[in-house]
Length: 214
Image 1 (cartoon, rainbow, N blue to C red):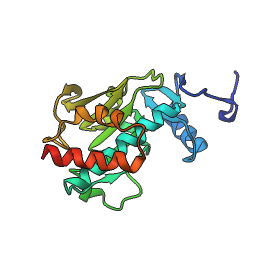
Image 2: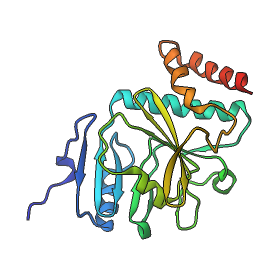
Image 3: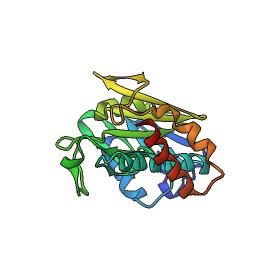
């Protein structure tokens, strides 16, 4: 039997490492050893564990779209809580994931100020963001569905697609439950038009875009 320590594993940027037959106890031990201060992200699905190293391009859109979500919420005066790439997991469902970003809106009051979560008692995030520029092997929809996340925004190659949970499956939608009056799928075009501008100019443009739609 060959034993390899995590410190020996180096995942190149934009690539992922897929491990099989990983028990829940091993998954939790790996999370503990990796710690919170790292560039990699994980996903766990019934014994399969994926460790990913995102590209700078991936991180740019993660941050930019995440900022846009916050700016939209503030522009329409909606309370929210942002938990970034926190680890969400449920042992009973054999599911765990670290989204590119995640937010509470409908359930914000229930988690306000919370620093520790148990999804057997606490609601999952109302919105998760996935940027698909890195190679991701596991089916994230299946993981999110078992965690009960109601809405996912998936950005890929200049397009933003909204997926809503119905039963145990996600379906594409033209309308967000979080921001039902806004044309969210038009966000990538706005971001691209402002990509060479200063960050604050882009954030002002998002707020003006929201005002124009209202």
